[in-house]
Length: 68
Image (cartoon, rainbow, N blue to C red):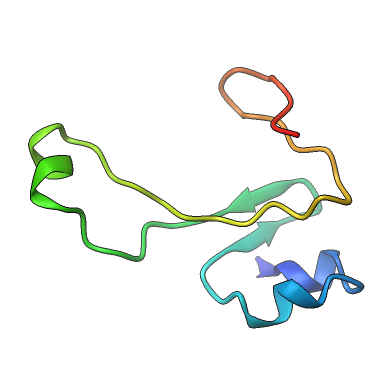
């Protein structure tokens, strides 16, 4: 695991993001760091905020579809 800015050193927006990481050079890890709302808990869901640098192509792991 390493910080996002290690993979994207020219993207200064990533210097202040401490809640997501890169696993190798191709897997973004964005763990849940906020408590869910009561509404989300009832639906057994959780929300995760993350930032995708625009200078890369990103894919959803499950659908294999591009997110850009």
